[in-house]
Image (cartoon, rainbow, N blue to C red; front, side, top):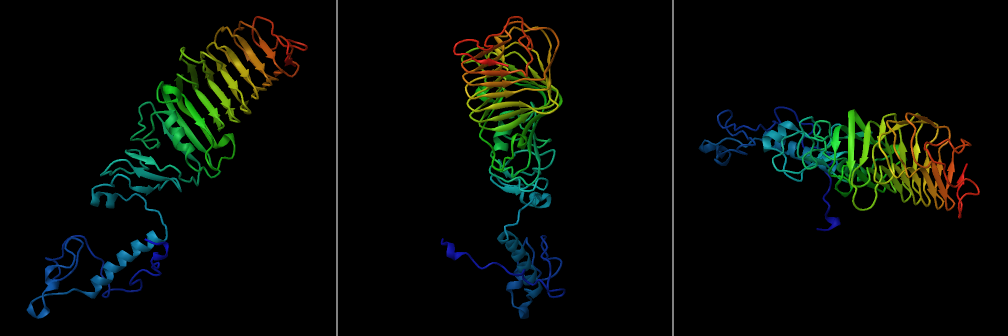
Length: 408
């Protein structure tokens, strides 16, 4: 078919000005025992319409033609106008449910499209009982939208609504980042529970690579919680930004539990990624690697009003590696126990840590306070060499080690 074969659009619905008795709405049930010769969607034009009037036939009636053509042209004009098709429970019941591959416009979120993953799907994709609908990837958001995750949800039959949540944080992130957020906010709300599968490297964590179209900054994609603690047992990093912008807030307990292979961390930002820490309930549990790692142009920033707690040991609490920047200032860091760190703060090969104005509470920590080496910078705002937690003096104060780093 050629583009030039595009038919003329229907300028006006057929018989738009017709009124009774010149137009008749076509009913679904048979009219054979109601009105001789009347049309219906069950019979079409009945047998009497094919018998001459002189021989006892009846109809067909002009009002039926007008009614039928009006309904047909109204539907065609709607589609030609590119108008959305919302869920219709009456229609769904009449056809036995929507088939696999059907695309339905959300009646709740403007611009969000649902696609059915099964045949005979009678559930409303926007309802609490929705099942077997998933967001159509590449859609456009026209308002702030929340995708829900629950340990009892499903990545295959869930659609991310509160009534039909996804099962893994990773799947929700995959859906959200393939949308055009269009300057709006996509929030991934994770319900109380323990998440140990489905994320990065098979763990409960999440990797976000690149940003959705229409991103306005770290506030465009938010990971948050509802209810009690959300424990992430990450075989890989718990939150990994590979060039993505997002914020982590809420009652997340981040445990990096894979003690085989390469060390991994709780929050990592690399390749120009930007990660914000918000709220007052984040907890960093034990980590084979670091609690926070920034490298290759990545940054991790404590947003205004933040506070977090430390509930486990790590190689380093903060690690700013080549080109990385960690900005944790004017907040509160609470320790739930005594933990031994390789260094509490490590900055090397040009990595920068800005940590002025912090309040540390809870038991004293053990291990070296800091290591600034190979042109790494740790800026405490003049907090002094005992400012950071630890039981062993740090290394890297000017002139420091060779090649030296700076501890300010």
